[in-house]
Image (cartoon, rainbow, N blue to C red; front, side, top):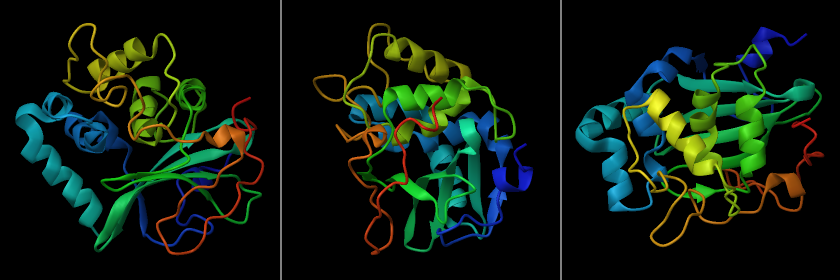
Length: 233
């Protein structure tokens, strides 16, 4: 049985920062999602679609989360007792959002991606993203597949966007925000100027185990401890 204290940790092994706070209520606020997804916008049209008239309010909330004394952490439980942590890193002058993978048997969490105005990976493939969103495991910040998909979406780094991805993301945006993507047009994070690609352009998938994540510190990244799909099935 998974320990709830581990799901909503006071500390994350190998990751400095905090104090951490559990804020699942934010996932019910459309302003939170507009700020969380802001860096996914790859064009002026996408940015306008995401923010529209709520840009100042969304920016204010995002600023509060990234400049506060506490660091909000959201948890997505995975199979075999793995878990993904989404950490709002509130270091002064080094703010950003970190995506971490951890297991209780590991000495330290692995950085999968970070979002701080620019993107660093290797990030998640579409299969990994949807597997985490859809597993329905209890104990995390939410079991809602739409919320999980959007929470992890900025860490999406797969240049292979399958059929159905646009419809899936459009449904999630409609369910959790007030964003209505134009019919037939890829929503933010699945498009750039000329073709459908992930938020930050092609990135290697963590499922291959062949690359390492870039960490927010100057410490060289380390190899991931046996990632290939072990936390998907």
